[in-house]
Length: 299
Image 1 (tube, rainbow, N blue to C red):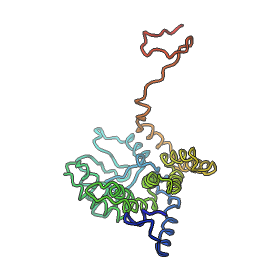
Image 2 (spheres, rainbow, N blue to C red; image 1 turned 90 degrees about the vertical axis):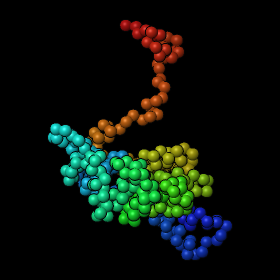
Image 3 (cartoon, rainbow, N blue to C red; image 1 turned 135 degrees about the vertical axis):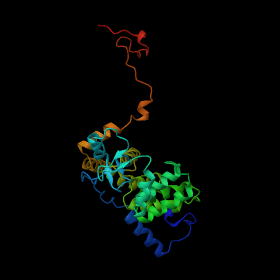
Image 4 (cartoon, rainbow, N blue to C red; image 1 turned 180 degrees about the vertical axis):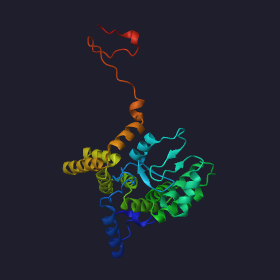
């Protein structure tokens, strides 16, 4: 049984009522369904990528645009001095000086994501705003009420860790994460999978990872692979998950997005900072010295 659904004060020693059993069953049925289809990019009309760092919420018009379309308009931008980002949808230029103004305008029309953007600003105290974590939580709550999955998932993490002055409440935090996951937040889904890491709940964690991987989320796929090597996932389940993962990835690929991804992706830190592998000497089979004067190239 998923005790987190019923709050931190719930004891597994107490018998569940028929109503509570029915509520838990109905919620699990909703929780462990595949994610609904992601929306399309408002410019190219191709399905948006699952990765949050491959799409951008535009403060000017509230559209979510893939990085392929953003990079394409940057290449075509004919302004002599390219100060700020030109929106590919409404052609408004956003800069550090008008960011807060643009966000507030979106908040006036109850754009869910704008409340989360302002919450981020107040959390960090950026763009000339004073840090105000209490107000940031209030904005997250409003964004969540309006339908922002990012805000809902962020509230879940905040309650789980007792952040931003909130009293730690793991049950409430999981509830927020589950609400976000049901509506398609793969980040919330991955977080839930990581939380279900006990022998009693590992099967629930695996379900979360499989659903996230089927939606094209690489960290979830890595978790499914790890579960497979440890015997928690069958060969058939892993093969089906891997196939669906690639189908989801391919469904969102375009030439423009591939170009943007190649341009924007930094080197992986693990690869960037690991010691280099030096080749062996072909004679003695001992690794060659790293200093050039310690070895000789024979013509």
